[in-house]
Image 1: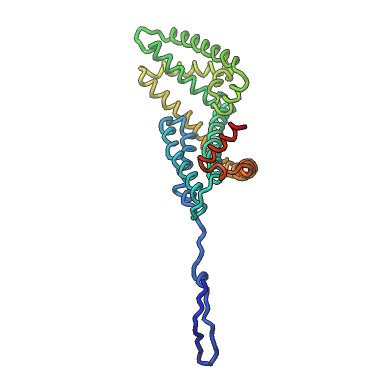
Image 2 (image 1 turned 90 degrees about the horizontal axis):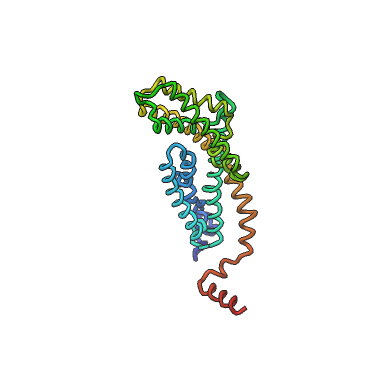
Length: 304
């Protein structure tokens, strides 16, 4: 707004000064900052990623982590529909684009990479020490826990030598059944298992039989010699299993941290700009913004 006085003023030198000023210059324009994209609120969008990484350790907590993430998802999409920056401007295209972005960048792709990270870390164990995957060790320990409880190996009438023989036969059957069952799976199930299923279905089947058998027998012998009751066995194995799960969770966190920028960049620059926006440009959202327009469209289809 420009303000021009009706009367000019005269200075002491009898020169006329034009007192004009631009009020706009007195106001500093502030760049709009989306509150939903600023921290700490932005952290709500990552809670489901944390849940994916901690799913192995705390499955119930991991499920609850989806609640704030989905609330953030809905709030962000609704905000982008109603407002363009700090201006009220409802726009369905903008909302749809943001929904696609959040679904891929905050939910689908982090979940995929998180599971891939856990699978990768599980398989890394094959290249060191006992050369068995983390999941193979975990499933072996779980089998021993189940066997010890069902066969009552700590009863006084049990003989250690016979217990060891019976366990060796039982685990051998377990390995053969797991191996035969996995062989009958189709290629898609096996690919999903290795990439996203943390190799749980094929953990035992894909292990070297001699190595996994020796590991199981040694673990069982140690239990027989060092533990006197089922509660002590469960406590020991629960700690060992927790450590194995923590290693897989570390893999999930590592994968999420390494791929975070890539996921956002790929979703924004490739999926949104090259796929979603060109398709949305072909569709007129305003044409079908009212229910009467939909009814009119249905009437035309029926007449044709």
